[in-house]
Image 1 (cartoon, rainbow over the protein chains, first blue to last red):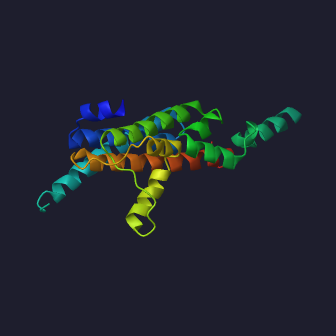
Image 2 (cartoon, rainbow over the protein chains, first blue to last red; image 1 turned 90 degrees about the horizontal axis):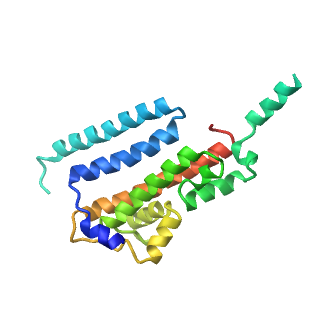
Image 3 (cartoon, rainbow over the protein chains, first blue to last red; image 1 turned 120 degrees about the vertical axis):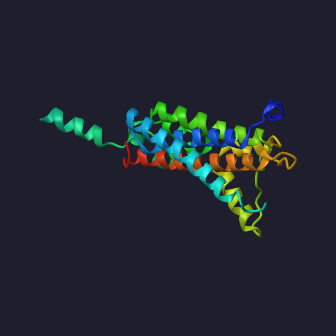
Length: 66
Length: 140
């Protein structure tokens, strides 16, 4: 099953970043906050911070050769 | 007055003792199966979120062609990677036994897959410690 999924799984770099940020932010929100509203706000903040920092680092590294 | 005192005692009692589990056993259960330490303390919302998220990260990591590290004491990076992978508990042992996680260098996603699985392991350690903290009464 996993092998079939692996063949079908084609993610862009940005999609992989979004999936990663989604799950990690979700776990962080439930680890650090108790109430639903607090968790929702923390999740959004963490998710957007992951995306912004990821994109910013991508731009910063753009001039450097591989 | 007597009623108030008894309710205070119940509220101060750590969740782990209330459900009859030792705190360290809840930590180990949480490490072996993501979310199990919380489930045994009837923290259903956290248990479901941790189980789904950590399994999703680990499964996607393997599906992307990520590599699982082996015990290599001479190589500090492999050793740290192994310890991070080990954090995933039974998911790591199951993947190793199934022969998964050999790494697919032909795909650019392979590196991401390695990171996904490593992150799943590290997050699982955090959730296991959280289950322990709840059991000893440090967290709600």
